[in-house]
Length: 285
Image 1 (cartoon, helix red, strand yellow):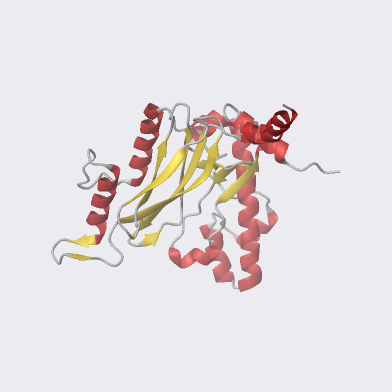
Image 2 (cartoon, rainbow, N blue to C red):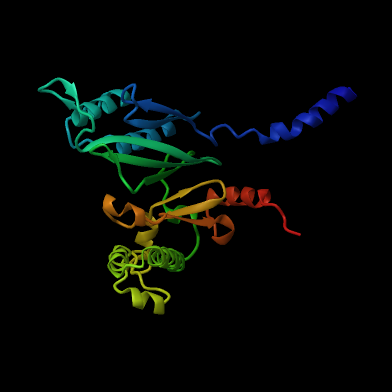
């Protein structure tokens, strides 16, 4: 009996660590072909209705229905049809090297726990990966696509202002690096224009210059509903993409702005995740 109790004692932490059924999705990949030019996530859950709801949204994210894709076909067939439209020349009966239009997609799971699934998607156009990614976050209990307002209780104007400050700090630092490396006034002026700064001299004088869409939005509630965001296991990830051509890629700033859960006010499903992240954080002496 003592041996049995001791064995159960040793197993207790492992048993407690097991995720609750349905709190994590089983994610698998559907591809268009053996070269995997189109890769799409699909989920399995104990609740098949919720899984179907999420999978429909994932399919819409990855398939372009403006062409002749049959929306009643299987996901793999729809990806295959999308591939044929972009990359197969019907006249010559040959595959094109790069393709035309929407030519590929891929994904990365950023978070899959605590009834939350957060996914990042990249898209290829004309054979080249777009500079900006897209993100979807789901409630695994209902299949609903979540907005920032569903997960964060911070006042919209306050959160938007913090995002603006972070954007401006980063862009100013990037521009200062450009000035230090190139020292060419024409290059500096060009990059300043890309970043939304009208004048480099003015940038050095004023702490906040860029008119980003967050704080300048007339309706902060609308921003909460439309902001591009994702989650990982310790932070809220907000995104700000600076539009530019591929010629200017050397000046492309990191679009990810990390807000640790400890620095925001979590709401809903984010509350237990934030508590778990706080418990994992090593205590400083």
